Image (cartoon, rainbow over all chains, first blue to last red; front, side):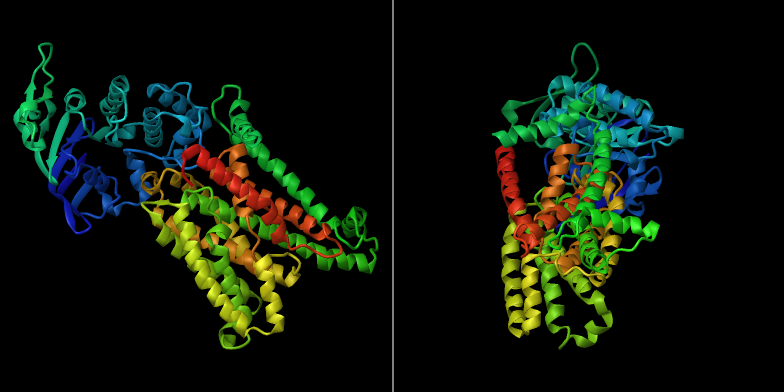
Length: 264
Length: 370
């Protein structure tokens, strides 16, 4: 369970996150959506323990600001928007770079097995020996996800959920890999872990997220189960532009289309 | 072209070494460390055996066997080995290892393969600290300096290095990434200030002090004595002992400060410890031997090309190769213009500066930035 209580974050004298209260249970995929500058990334960074904050941020009942870096690393993994790796590491080395940070049971053999499994799950089966710097942007992003998953290990060992914090995990990917990565995140949640992801694409959000939190100007505007929350009214209000929401004839997942005539 | 094809081979070879091409370079790195340890041993024996006096390998061998057999060794040769060559070789090992390891740590910390205590001006800061003590230590600063004894110069160099590193880090780092161009620009400003300070000190210095000061500029192991070894060894050994604990943090830092925090590294504390270790190793090395340049950038760079950038193996390998390389350069400096001696700083600069330029050019070719 992640619980934010009246969370506010100030950066450079400006209030970026303004009194957000929310909670999200383990075993679910929560998406944060909102226009650029609405405070999504800042909210995720305070969850990741990067920023001083007012109010309360609790992961598994523990106040984040009171945990050491390594205690936090044992609770959650973070996938940043873009990752530049200094020095010529191979894909394998990047994935295993922080391997020791988590308390992996089992020795080398177990780590090797996990590496192989994760690379094939992110669709980079034969990439272990490749140089990271020579990959495409999308491949790099998938290597980073594998690295984060390697750090966390089991999503829910001994009924204590691990958390995956993702900052726009699929923005640089093509549609096939977007689906692949979000499915991977959804599986992580199904296996008992928790996922909090900043999402850009509303239709992907509607497809994959269990919970949606809509932000604007640092405030939480609307939230709830994706299927109820993602109405054209809510979305238009949060993004401050005309949008049309609907249901496709083949299912009950909502879709969102821009209403070009009303775009401001 | 030839050079770049050589590098490509060097970078790809380890990858294709393993049958599955699985990118696991640890076996290669461990083999390299063993090989370098053997190489260092060879360099130590060579360093003891080479010199203008004609005391050669045979004498060194009988010197060591005499420890067990109790056989007599001529007093002259005993003195040459015990009082001249042995402290010099030990000093070479200590200084070479410190320079290479502090280069590797600084590159990890600044996330830049060109960051090196010599190039960014940390050695100059250490030199200024040392000069201050040499010139003012018997005068104005005597009450503070005299009780420190033989440790006064290394400590002053350490604080000079520490101050410079902290200043550089604060000034040149934005968002956890350090631009080498910013660093080099800062270096120009620092060099001007340090140059002025050095000018004042030189003006105040007497003849004997002046001779010592010239020595800082060029870098040399010629002044190595047991006493000097003893003075710098504690700081260097301490700094080297922290290196294994820094490896994991430096690896994590390759992804940036935020990612290192995510991976469980207490980033701020970690950076402080790294800076102190770099300042300690650089300060002690400069106090012992003056400004020996380029070891810190050449050694880690070569090793990264050959066996990968994992700091868990890079740091020990750097220590071994740095020490061996400095002993080889010292042997060259002692023999190339014998019976005179070329300062070792000149030798490392002659080898290192073209290498540095080559790295700069190949980086420009690859990434379009320096």
